[in-house]
Amino acid sequence: MRLTVRVSDQAPLRTSDEVAARVLAKRPELAVHSCVNAAGPTFGDVVADTTLPHLLEHLIIAEQARLLGDGLRNEVLVGTTELVADRRAVVEVSFVDDLVAVAALRRGLAILDDAVTL
Image 1: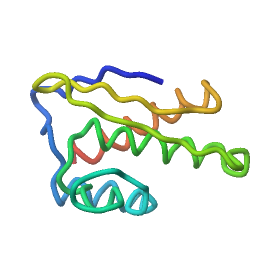
Image 2: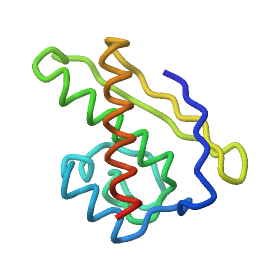
Image 3: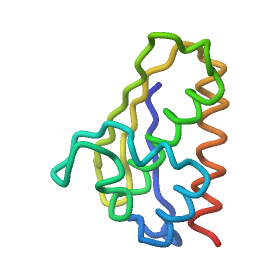
Image 4: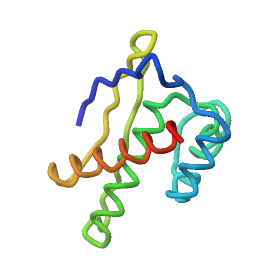
């Protein structure tokens, strides 16, 4: 799934400690997601200072895993996020079921919106 994501001018572009805490309270497994970054080997190493599209990438992966449960079996879901403009990014996430991927996107957006607007 390839998404072009634009962060609203009214929203922060990057996460904060508060946003990270809100998201991790709902999805603690994000802290141990593998993530290639300069700070360390996991998403937890950057969750408090990363872009909202990058957070969305990991939320989509987590939500797919939750929705698929045992149906995921040996599949590995991966993603990438690339900033392409000031407040725009391209997010790519693998999937095994397109309907589950769309549902995961919706749930991920809802969690992200709740974390940013509280």
